[in-house]
Image (tube, helix red, strand yellow):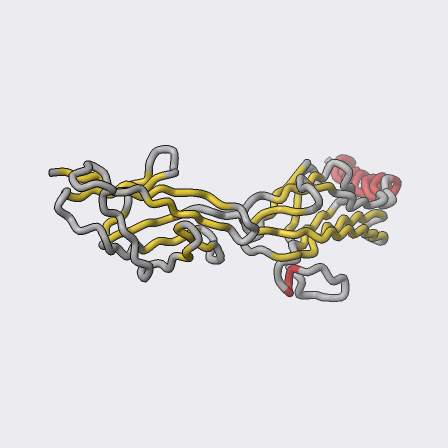
Length: 231
């Protein structure tokens, strides 16, 4: 037993020597990411994908650049980044508002028991546009319209004797900066007066009214709003 106990410190010492022999230099880091965007242009709340195939680093951090504390600055201790696993092939980031942002990736490597530490940084300016054109809600007289299966029409139901000549719909869009028109006339939720009455007396449907939702980037979508009328 005495000999067996004495050999443990020897094995431990040999392990340290072996570890020392395996002391490795740091790899050369690379922050060479690519994007899924054309002309570095993306859209609000749509994924911006960073492809990391050519990135080399023990520590990989992404800085979105969409706020003061997310813009990369090597001299700042308060900058917030997103840590990424070194084996990830890609990662998505999203932007909630339109604008121009400095998207940065920092790749870092270490070696020789952390005596060596190297970094590589790549920053890309991305332009984020808002192309959202969705009517998220459409209400008349506190009744929510029923959206068609294809998402292009809102339906309401009433009797043929109902007065539909001066309704004031309320509505909301998924983009706070989208504009809503009937023809060339800008519509204000809860204020603009609209005539949904039938084109001919006795018709089973009110006149279809086209609403055009225009996104800040100029994209648009058309919705049709109309009544079904019962006796």
